[in-house]
Amino acid sequence: MSDLIKLLPESVANQIAAGEVVQRPASVVKELLENAVDAGATKITLIIKDAGRMLVQVIDNGKGMSDTDARMSFERHATSKITTADDLFQIHTLGFRGEALASIAAVAQVEMKTRQTDEELGTKINIEGSKFISQEACTCDAGTSIAVKNLFFNIPVRRNFLKSNTQELKHIVEEFTKVALINPGIHFVLYNNDAKLYDLLPESFKQRIVNLVNKSYKEKLIAIESETEQIKISGFVCKPEFAKKSKTSEQYFFVNNRFVRHQYLRHAVESTYQELLPAEMYPMFFIKIDIVPSEVDVNIHPTKTEVNFQDSRTLYAILKAAIRKAFGMFSMRVPSMDFDVNPDFEALDLSGSRPVVSPAINTDPNYNPFEGMRGEKKTTTDEWKELYNGINREYDKRQEEVTLPLPEYENMSELNIGKSGFNLSEHFLQYKNKYIISTIDKGIIIIDQERAHERVLYEECLDKLDSGIAVSQIDMFPETITFSYDECIIINDNKETFEKFGFKLEKLGQSNYVISAHPASIATDEVKNFFMTLLSNLKDENERLLGNINRTIAKVSARKRCIKRGTVLHEDEMRAIATGLFGCKISDNDTSGNPTYAIIDMDAVSNFL
Ligand code: ADP
Ligand code: MG
Image (cartoon, rainbow, N blue to C red; front, top):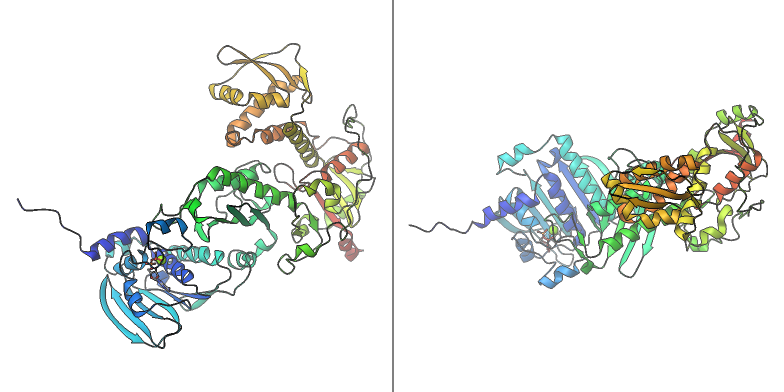
C-alpha cells in the first residue's frame, strides 16, 4: 500500500491560516493598520473601494522595509518583532506572529511599495494568491503602501459569504475606530470610494473619542485614573446618567495599546454602574490598561483580541475603585472650564479659588426630624410653578461643566458641602409635596425629596455597614420563615454581614429560619417584607459573589425607608434632607442614577425679566 501522508504545499497552508486571520475586508484593515502603527508611522491613510472587496489600501510614513525584508514579509512566520520564545513575554508591538501578510497574500492580489527613509529608491512587489509575480525598484514615498485588491478572488465561496456593502463597511469602520482611538497621536485619514470619511489630526485621547465616536461625548465622559507599580488605568467612562439600557454602548478596553474584549473586566465596569443604577446598564467607556507585558498573555487568539491576565481579580478591583473614585469626583464641579484647554490642574488653588462654604446648620446626629411629624399641610408655593416650568432644567447645562480631579479621594469629606460650591439658604419651601425649593448663590435649587433622601440614607447605611456599627432590635414574637434552597445559600453565605446590619437569624431545620432580631431602623411589621426584598435583590445581583453585599443592603434599605413623594414635609425635615444630600459623597444622583436636584440659574432668569 502506498504512503498517504504528504506535506501541504505552502500556498494551501497559507490559505488555511488565512481562514483564521482574514475573515472579511475588515480583518485586512486591522492587520495593515496595526503593521503601520508598529512601523512608527505618524500618518496613516486607509483607502477603501467597494466596501473593501475591490481595494483595501494602507499608506503609512513609517520606517519602511529593505528589498529583502519586503520580500520576506510575505513568508509565513516572518516577523521582525520577536526572535525567541522568551520575547513572547515582553511584547510591545501589535503584531508578532508573522502571519498576517502571508495570509492576506494567500487570498488576494497584493501590491506593496516600500522605501526606507535613507534609501533613494524603494521596492515594489506583486503577489497573487501566494504566488510571487514580480519585484522591482521604484520611486515612492518613504514608508509603506500596501494595496490589497480583489479579496478572496481565488476562493469564490468566501467571497460569496461576505455581507452587504453596508455591513462590511461597518466592520471596516469599527476596526479603523479601534486603532485610531488608541493612537490619538497619529494622523488618520479614511477614504471610502474617494469620499473622505475621516481626517483625524493628532490630538488628545478625549478629543479623539469625541471626533471619532460621537461629538456629544464631550460632555458625557469623566476621566478615570489609577496607577500601581504594575498597572496603570486611565481613560474615560460615561457619567452615570448616560449609561444605556440597550447593549449598543461603545465599550472599549485597550490593553497595552491594543483593543481587546474582556467579559470579566466589562463586568467590573457595569457592576460599578449598578451600584448607582437599578437595571442592567450598559455604560460606554474607553479604558486604557497599561500593564507590564509579562503579566498578560495576548497570544491566545490569532487576531489577538482576547487576552489573559495573570491576576485578573486584582485588576478587577483596581478598575472598580478607579471608576468609583471618578464618580466621587464628578460631584466636584467648578464653573465651566475646558478640560482639554486647561489640563494644568496643579495650578489650581483648591482651597481658595472656589467658594467652599461650610453648612450653616449644626446637625445633631441623634436627632431624627422625621419622627412624629406627619400630616400637617404646609404652604403651597404655586408662585414657583411658572418659573420652574419656563426655564430649562439646570441639569442639562451642568453637563457642560467639568470634573475637577482631586489629588486624593480622601479629601472629599473635608470639602463636603463646599464641594458643590452651594451656599444653601436657611429657608425651604415644599412644592407639590415632591420638591424642596431653596436658594443658593447662583439661583434657585429644586431638590427631589424622595431621590435626595434615598441618597442620604444609602450613604449613611453604607457607612454604618462598612464601619460595622448597627443597632439591633430584638423581636419579641419572632416568625419562622421558610426559604428556598438558593435563598438559604445566600443567608448562609452572608450571615455575618446580615448581623452587622442588625439581622439575627437562627436556623431551624433544613430551610427554616427565625429572625430573632432586626435592624432598629426597620419597623417590626416591615421586617419580613424587607428581608425578602433584600434576598431577591441579592439573587438578582451577582454582586454577592463579589463581596458587595453592603451596597445591596444599603440600596434596599434606603429605597424602602426614604421619604416618598407626596409626603408633606416640615422645614426642618427639608433642611435635613438638603444638607444631608450635599454632605454625600455623590449628591447628583439617587442610587438609580436619577438626578436629585435641578438649579434655575438666576443669570438665565434675568434674560426673561
Ligand atoms: P507581524 O506583524 O506579526 O510581525 P505581519 O505578517 O503583519 O507579521 O508582518 C510581517 C513583517 O513585515 C513585520 O514583522 C514587519 O517587519 C514587516 N512589516 C509589515 N508591514 C509593515 C509596514 N507597514 N511597515 C514596515 N514594516 C512592515
Ligand atoms: Mg502584523
